[in-house]
Amino acid sequence: MATSSRLYLVRHGQASAGFAEAHDPGLDERGHQQARAVAQELAPLGPLPILTSPLKRTRETATLLEQLWRMTAQVEPCVAEIPSLTTDLQERTIWLQQALRGRWGELSAFHQQWRDALVAFLESRTTPMVITTHFVAINVAVGAATGDDRMVCFEPDNCSCTVFDVVEGKLRLVSLGRQRATRIR
View (cartoon, rainbow, N blue to C red):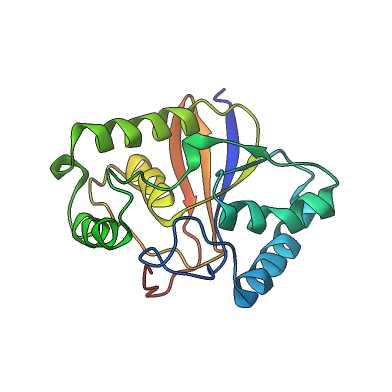
């Protein structure tokens, strides 16, 4: 019989600044409200281990669930946002906007290795858990589970939860999170 682990990938709440405006913004008031709502939604499932990207907006998204479950999230760099090869905010925004219109096969080997490492990390999970992460990282998981090479397979809303099972070391999509036409800012 196949063994599986359920992963709940939560996109962070609405950030206080866009991709072109700050390197590591926290949540704005709406983002905090979204984080409270998703924590209440997930609370009956746990306590489960919580992993979070090192970025402020994901750590702040995980905070309320940490409080409800009386535990501390583990910071995991593998689930961080897609790395940019520049620190210039305008350049990285232009790069990301162009990249999101394409496919993984069109990106640099560096970015393909980042994607492969993220997939390998997720597929190595052996216990159910909640992971607060980012738009692109969730799309990486969806693409791996469905065999889709597009950078954007769907558009997860802030604090939506996309669910996967890891079955015999492979990601299986259970359900897509709530979607909207979010503007990546």
